[in-house]
Image (cartoon, rainbow, N blue to C red; front, side):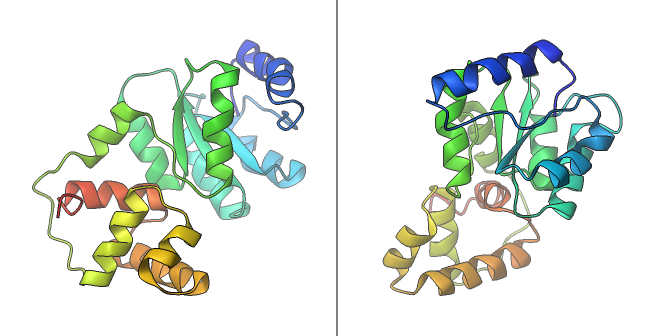
Length: 202
């Protein structure tokens, strides 16, 4: 979802070439209001959303996609160095954020990581969201803290299950309960909450 035709055309041409056909653009629109409908129609594995599209804007497009097609992974993109739009996109349900300065061949590893269940953020943004602050304390027990640290470290469900000595199904249930307790919608935002609360250095 991008209102810059040259950027979209570049992805259409270069993604198939740089990924040996593993990735391709199946649909595009520059209209944020039409983004959710396009995703519902095209059934992609992943949606890239430019946060600076004209009103209603990329963040609302992210939220609409999450409501209508919750199984589609969403990655926000922006050419701005301002972290605020990226944080808003994460709160709206995006699984990751990538700068629009990335070359197409640089996009593949993080996009595949998102499809595998990882949260992807540039190092600068990750440092910003994990910087401890005087946030309200989060009342978590020892098991919840271990789970949160594993999520923040980017571990997948299988690895977390092995670390906590529980089943993958239990990890998914625990993760869903933890996200509800933290009042967040995804793992990336949970990691941000952990960083702001100073839980990652314990």
